[in-house]
Length: 439
Image (cartoon, rainbow, N blue to C red; front, top):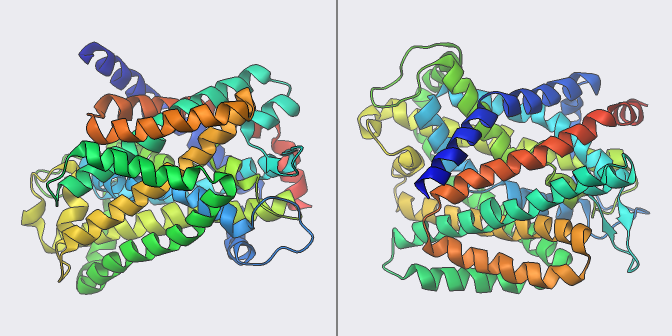
C-alpha cells in the first residue's frame, strides 16, 4: 500500500506541478481575453441567477442549477484547502488562488455554454448534458466521452463522497466521543434521503443549504476581519508581497518561495472552483434558460462566489489572524490554521467552524452525487443509477471510518483525468463559443 501511495504522490506531484497548471491556467487566460474579458459581465450573471426565466426550456431554475454546482464546489477546500495552501505556500498562495478564480470564470463560462448548447432532451422531457455529450455528439470522440465519464464516476467516490464523509467524521469526533461507524451510517442515510429524490430534489436542498452554510461561515470570517481591521493593510501587503517575494513569513510556516506560492495557490484554486474540470457544466445543462449564453453567464458566477469571494475572505481571515497572533501559528498543523483563526470568536469559534465544515462537506456529497449520476446515465442509462447510488452511499460510510490519504491522492488524479478531455472539448469548439458570445 505504501508503494501505491508513493506512486500516486509522484504522479500527482508531476501533473499538478506543471502540466495541469499550464493547461488549465493557460485555458483560463486564453478565454478571458478572447471572450472580451467576460468577467465584466458577472453582475449580469448574478442578476440572471435570481431572475425568473420566461419561455425557456430546462428542468430547474437557473439559481437551482447554480446552487447544485456551488454545493459541490463550496466545500472543505474553502476551509482546509486554503489553510493548507497558506501553510505550504505562504500567504502569497492566497493571491494566486484568487487570480486563478478570476481567470477561471472565463473557462467556466465556456464549458457551461457548450453543455447547454448541446444538451440532450430525454423522452420524459428532461434535459441532460455535460462534456461527454459534446465530445460524442459534436466532436464524434466517443472514447474521450467515455474517458471523461468513467473518471467522473471514480472521482465522485473519492472527492465527492468518501473524502467529504471523512471530514464530517473528523469534525464531529473532534467535539463529541462517538463511533465513526455511527457517523458514517447517519451521514449516508441523510444523504440517501436527499439523493433518492433525484436531480430536482438535490437542487431543492442545495437551493436552501448553500446560502445558509455560506452565510454561517462568512459571518465568523467577517467578525474576525472586523476585529483585525487595523491589521488589514498589513495583511494585504503581506499576501501580495509574498506572492512575488522569496522572503520567509513567520518561522515554522514552510512556504517561502514564489514558485511554491504559485504552484500551491493555483492548484488549490483550480481544485476548489473546478473551473475546467467539466463538473459544473453537468449542472448547467439542467437549467431552464433561453440561450447558452444566458446560462453560461449564470454558471460562471459560481467560480466568482467560490474562489474570488469565499477563498479570498478565508485567506484574509487567516492571514490577518497570523499577523495579529504570530506565536499561535508557529509549527501549527497545516489543516488547523482556520481553527486557530476562529478561536478569536467570542463564543466557541471551533464549534462554529466544525459546523461549517460539516455543512460544506454534506453539500458536496449531494452535489457530487448529481455529477456521478449524470456520468452513469451517459455510460449505462437509467438502469445504472440505482446501483450507483448504493455504491455511492457505501463510499460515504467508508469515508467516515477509514484513513483517506490514498483516496485524497487518487481523487486528485481522477480530477486531472476529467479535465483533459473537457479542456480538449472547449479548445476544439472555441470558435463557436467566441462567435456566439461576442455577436
